[in-house]
Length: 191
Image 1: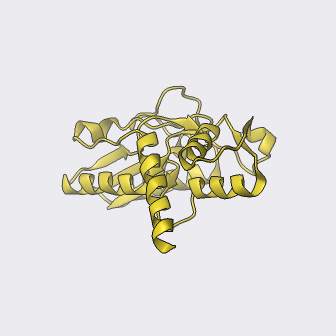
Image 2: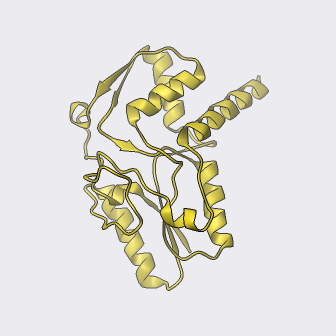
């Protein structure tokens, strides 16, 4: 069984990427529910693959890049947090990496995200740059947004165990570029 979990099983107090062996300590309900799922998988099965990932986006859904572009066109300016840092992960790259784990019959906990990390603000700025949109992006904090729940401030994941098996993931900027280019081609094909 492959169970997809989250970077939010960690509290975000660490300032370097979390390793697969680091102790989880979720700070919100979502993180606690994902950790509970991990626990149930471990209790039910001897052979499993728990895959922790973060900030998923990809074709077939309206995700962060699409929301940013729509908001930029609608509002003309954006405000995004700098105190939430993780790794944007393209679903196509994640699917390829998970498929690799399955082919290798891998067992255990694995972190699979596109390489590198950024804040939500930095991610939005890259989306806008790649789309050729010139929109100001103001820095904010989670507290200023008044979110209903707290997110880990730093929850970047290190893909150590998968890399030992030869499964690597490219930098998030490369994956985002391909996503934006693919989305643009799809729109042009529809016209």
